[in-house]
Length: 330
Image (cartoon, rainbow, N blue to C red):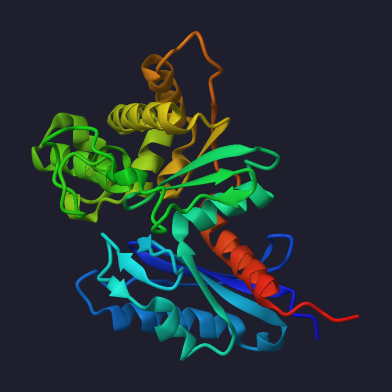
């Protein structure tokens, strides 16, 4: 039987999402679990991954070529080990080895942003582009580069960790251990943190947001802020303007370093669309080095939404299996 399907798993700071994906990037089935709290053991997170994989393999295992894992962390050059994950408890975690003992099809591990960028280049907003930078705004900020159809992973496998560029010396403490990282100013965590600070200060600007959570700031989530902004709440719109400003600052720095033709913005925060992207474009144009004398990269939202990571992980895993397979003899 043809094994044209692959399972893609996207591991974020708050969830494990999986999908059964065909060769055209279409998601045929889905499964999801909440990620256990980051203080739990790596084994608990791996148990959650195995649960999602088992659900998706049920009844389809003979048709599945591989399982691709998109991990939110620094995936080493061996594409088997998660060296460090700021939002999970992995430290030099042999993820491929641990999962392969429990999953009956080949496992392939990559960074989640690499997987999302690959999906957008293959099936989404970056099709036909030769130089693409993807920025994923979720719990933190992930990033990836696709140049001439190749993911640029770097010498040690951890290229694209744009979220940990320092943009404010001595600024907000980051979970990576440093201060002033970009993701402390332009991520989902940053959006919620700033909103909650207004709420706990009993600012009249936060009246609408407080009403949405019955006065409990800890109940506020990023999607709630997005909904408020779409409903016209001026504070929520202002928060997205601020996050968008910092997004534009970082993108201008990336343009100076990599000179791509296209920036694709993905992740959960990107669901706000132009509420986020238009302020980012404005700041990008103001901050771009050599502005007015160089071509300007476009900034677009991801076409595949929150499923880009799992679609890309599945497609990369399928390709890995094909590349490792022995050539047929005539």
